[in-house]
Amino acid sequence: MRYHYDVRPEAVMKIRAFYQHVAEKYRHTYSFEDATRNIYNAIYAIYRIEHTIPRRRPTLTQWQGMHMAKAGKWYYAYTVDGDTITICDACHEQNMAETT
Image 1 (cartoon, one colour):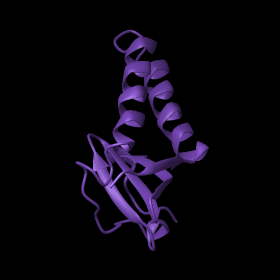
Image 2 (image 1 turned 90 degrees about the horizontal axis):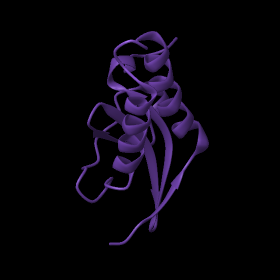
Image 3 (image 1 turned 120 degrees about the vertical axis):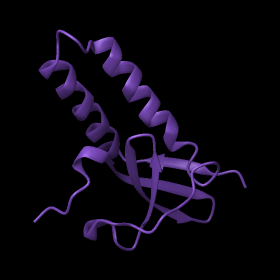
Image 4 (image 1 turned 45 degrees about the vertical axis):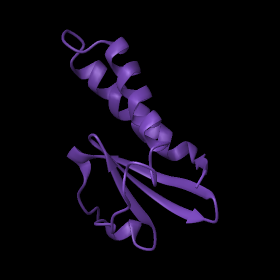
């Protein structure tokens, strides 16, 4: 099946913010070029969801009612409505913990 992907800006911003923070914190060993490459790879992986990345049951409470997929070091929360996959949230594996 061919899907249409709707990626919410909040999900993209979480990916960008994570890698920009890493680039700022480790500026002597991790460049903004590294960050750009990692951002691109994390966003590009979204388009493999439901094709080569299988759906999982969400592990975070705030993602209940959605599907979850893991690609590389990123987890994605998404919904499927017909042929449209909406990426609602993204979380790096280091931050996969319940928030209170």
